[in-house]
Amino acid sequence: MDFASVERNEWTNSAVAASYAEGFARAAEMCVPAFVDRCGGAAEVLDLCCGHGIIARALVDAGMKATAADFSPAMLELAAARVPEARIIEADAMALLFDDESFDAITIGFGIPHVPDPPQVLRECWRVLRPGGRLVYSAWRGPEAKTAMVGVFQAIAAYGDPTVQLPPGPGASDYVQPTIAGPALEAAGFEDVVYDTVPSKWVSDDPAAPYDYFLNGTARGGFLLRQQGPEFARSIRAAIVAWVEKNCPGGPPWQIPIPAGLVTATKA
Ligand SMILES: C[S@@+](CC[C@H](N)C(=O)[O-])C[C@H]1O[C@@H](n2cnc3c(N)ncnc32)[C@H](O)[C@@H]1O
Image 1 (cartoon, protein in one colour):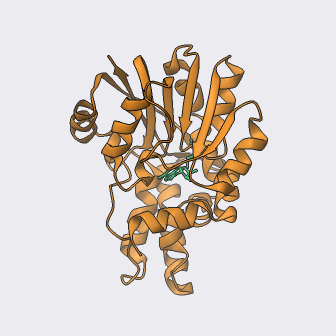
Image 2 (cartoon, rainbow, N blue to C red):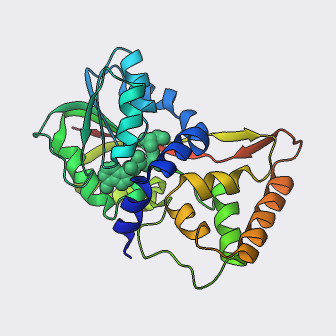
Image 3 (tube, rainbow, N blue to C red):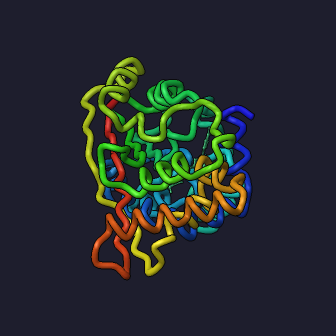
């Protein structure tokens, strides 16, 4: 199975969508105020890869007009319930259905890591933004930060079944790295790129919470974890618990860091 098929299969699964919304997304929610702030009162905003609609909800609450787009009908159903004021559209981020210069701002919360060709999404965003418009997107920070993301994927690499591998695709944190994002944004036509970090985290009484969040509510993590036999799964879970106990002193409740990178760029 290729990367695009893994992503589509996982996100269109209504159990994965619901679990993401209930568990994993508690950390994503901490980034929502920064998205609203970076949109700077834009009149009309496209929330791309909208998921269950947490950013679109906040944009509408702040007085902006929101269009929420995603390729997962299961996610769009959750978004429609959360933000009935928004225009809800099924769309692939790599081939947007909108006319040129349709929006004043675009938000992409944790969507860029899931598309097979992020530079194509950046080009599409530039096309549908009006001059002066802003693109704001996020992705989880990588190994340079203290993050449960690394704790989980290191546990899978060290203790998982070596025959279970992801198909090749973009790295989960690539497009919050200036060395990768900068040239891609510039090639798409963007200027004035700003990089921020949001210190998002989970707070849980269960040190195995990251294991459950990745198992049940993510595309890549779920794909890898659901294929492990019971022995491998037990070892991975134990390694994640050990990571939390070592890296999140003071629990319970455990303050489990999963910081996000936030990138803002402007179409001149
Ligand atoms: C991690 S969730 C993020 C949801 C929400 N934006 C948030 O901040 O919590 C990623 C979302 O991207 C969507 N997605 C992944 N690839 C996509 C694509 N090629 N086109 C449109 N949506 C896509 C998934 O369906 C999923 O809803």
